[in-house]
Length: 175
Image (tube, rainbow, N blue to C red; front, side, top):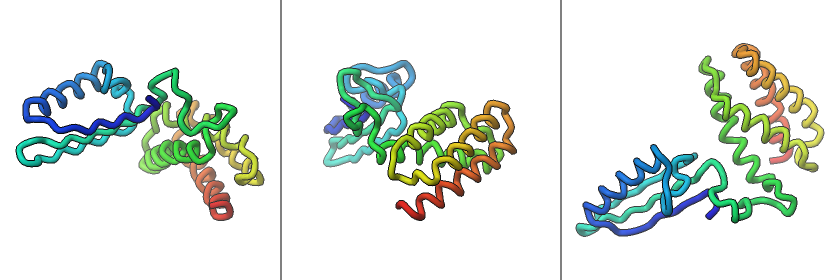
């Protein structure tokens, strides 16, 4: 199953209402079958069009983690590590949130910070993608971790700005 689910079907009005209620319940309490893992969604899109008295429903959701243990991680290399591109995409999401919240004077969620720092530690193990920037980047990440654990928003602001600077330097050369 992976971590993405797609639903595409035509429904009458009553079936659409039932679908939306079932979806809401699955988000609240956990789901089964077509709603498996929807309670852990990272992204959810629903499109409904009224077409000649029937409703065309398209729904997609991505769960934060792999939904089925029997499937291999999508986008993984032979060692089981995520492909570099998949890792960077995941990091972009957490980094954007952390940067925005810190610059707004708010403490980011622990899950976002932990995810970003764990992914950063993994990222610097990939050779050939900016190795010369990895040391400074790793030091800035350590400063972010220390500041976050201390609850020091001002120090987090300084650390995230250094990370953003190192990211920009590296991406200017490698993107």
